[in-house]
Length: 146
Image 1 (cartoon, helix red, strand yellow):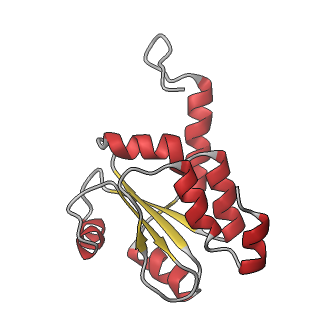
Image 2 (cartoon, helix red, strand yellow; image 1 turned 180 degrees about the vertical axis):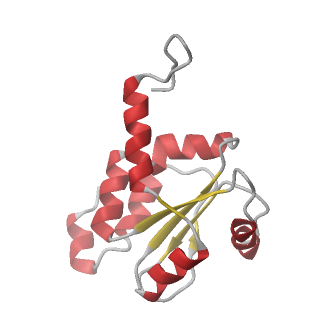
């Protein structure tokens, strides 16, 4: 679904996939992250930008796949999208806190308290599935290994 139809419109399946993805990811805000962390919920933050090619590849091949969406739901992980296209200062501060000056960056916060894991710059579906499975309670972990 990366092609364009005549007239510059994306093919219908691409539009449907993008709409599905948009429903799946919640916009990042400091308040939203603080609220989810206060509830003890695990959180995955995708730091991205429209002009970031690596970000777009990560989204297409790893973050926005059906198996990853299912694994996020199974592990009770809240997916947040930190869109740095317009270089939002609150997003810049969080990037800097983790030693980054730009995107992509992906953070995975554990259930309960604890510091986030900074995932590799280039993501794979298998890496995400493995990290998300590690958030499942021990009995579920056995049943959900790929």
